[in-house]
Length: 136
Image (cartoon, rainbow, N blue to C red):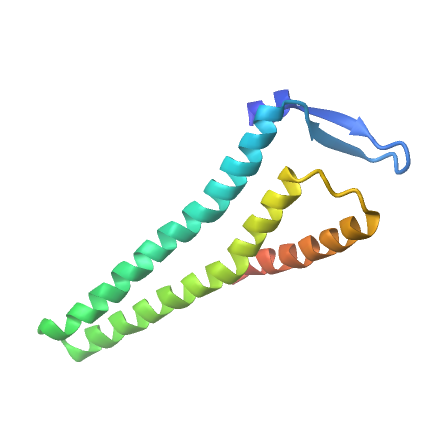
């Protein structure tokens, strides 16, 4: 949090008079784009959930070799199905957000205003999907 306070400067837009923060340090901007957003908010979360999903699936596959009550087997199967569905939901909600946010923070080469408007519209739709993930 302290690094955000030190490495951002407030800039007032001359047309809209809105205040926005802009990174003043190139290394910090690259760290935020590639490490914080891409790794911690995207890939790490999906990797951890995928590993636990595969472990749950492997556990269910080994249930046939153990003598367990049928009720426990069914509950384990339901749990593994829920984890696998959660992985699919993660891929469809978190991955587009990670890609769009990385592109949004790392690409400053878009000069065409129509392309900028289209890209911002796509990012807004992706953000709606991303926020829907947390409403589950």
